Image (cartoon, rainbow, N blue to C red):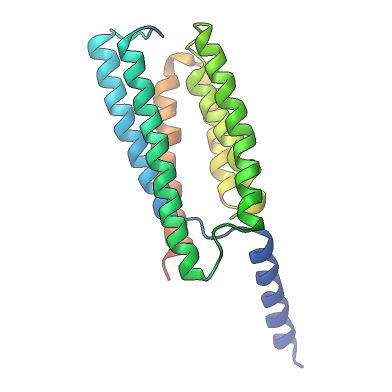
Length: 202
């Protein structure tokens, strides 16, 4: 057997190991659409806050409830789109959407995300609004880095970017909204486009 055959066998074994331990059918297009949803949600939020709340929010105000609903819809649409496109891609790749690797991916993604969401709700109930944008970015970034061990490794770079943006937002809370727009909107579109052409286009 030649050296080329050995290298080919090693590459095949490596790919099989990656498929058994990592969920690799994430869709780049879902990242692009999630970014678009975030930009639309940010535009609606900016309009509501600047038009009806004069740049400030209170928990008992109707504007806050609308903003919360917008954030919920952005997250909901992103999740539904991600599940649909990822399921479609997994079927094309002959990969199960719900196996050991996808379960580990989801588990490691949700731990920092749920913990962060609960913490943000706690500080909102205490009337501390200034750090929410930064905290959302930081915990989301931590969730991506944690999940990257069980999926496409490239998502950890998006996670690091989100964490850095979140830390900057914590230092300059007055720019938290715009850094949120960059992190959840623009960076998702850039990352999704990169992933689409790297992994989806054949």
